[in-house]
Length: 437
Image (cartoon, rainbow, N blue to C red):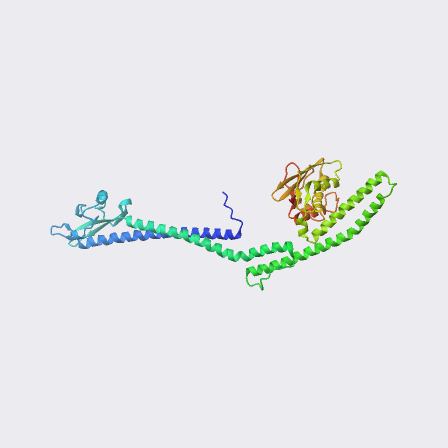
């Protein structure tokens, strides 16, 4: 049996639980009221029956002949008096209860019974003044009492429904007012994370749970901002240090290409060196923009998905492995160099471990493009699914610095996407999700 899932909204959970608890409490209260009312009704009916029987008994006398005598004034409807032989001496039983009255006419102990729609019946043996004995039998209809019970049930149920609705409305209003600062803080924090890491919540000295939460979030934001600034500073310094040797390499390659007597094979090698240095320079520039948190530049840029994957394929070292790229025309909402840098390490990793083939396919979703990289390699163990994205984590052969997948994931997540291992039974599958342009 599966229990229904609660809504994810904390406020809705509180409202739902409040309404549910109130409804259960009102239902239990209704049951208790009905049980107590039923007992009170039974007690009242028995008291009325006993009062009527006592009135008849107190008026009964013994005639000179020894017969039991009861004045007609005490004989209400449904009252019958029998002598000690079970003969009717006064009153008249109801037609529907004649047989039952006859059965109770000879009882020697007080008897009270309920007979469905006929009501409740009391048979009370007595001895009248003068020594004559007999049995007085009286009945009381239950319809008026049952009607009162039904009316009480309706009133209780209506009250329960109204109370439950009122409790839900009050809970919704209270939680909305109480949690509004939390919603505002969450929305504000999301805005700050994209625009200004230096801003903080200003709720004053912590004097309640929400202001204490704001203080904790301020401390967390300070730590995050400090970490981001340190990372940006490190990335900027590394990029600055790499730019000088890259410029020198590219300049020397261009000078060598100007020579007239350069052999064809050497020229191809130098052209490749020049192209690689240009690609690296463009990547460093894009990473610098990313490190400086220029979100408006990143989100405002677009590039062609076909051109990005063509550059990825040209840079990849396929060797004997077949690289099959099947992609439809589309656009990505990030700079070309960043898109190449987010996809290329994943493709290189697949080529490194594939046996014969690597396939790259794309699927457009709502607001994103999913790029799948499948290879027929040994796969990724379940315990390594997240570890392979840690900086410095290399393959078993120890090749590489272990930064490719980590940088790819960081770039993708910075622009609102992700890089992860996707479940697949037929192959090793990586998913690269990037925003669609």
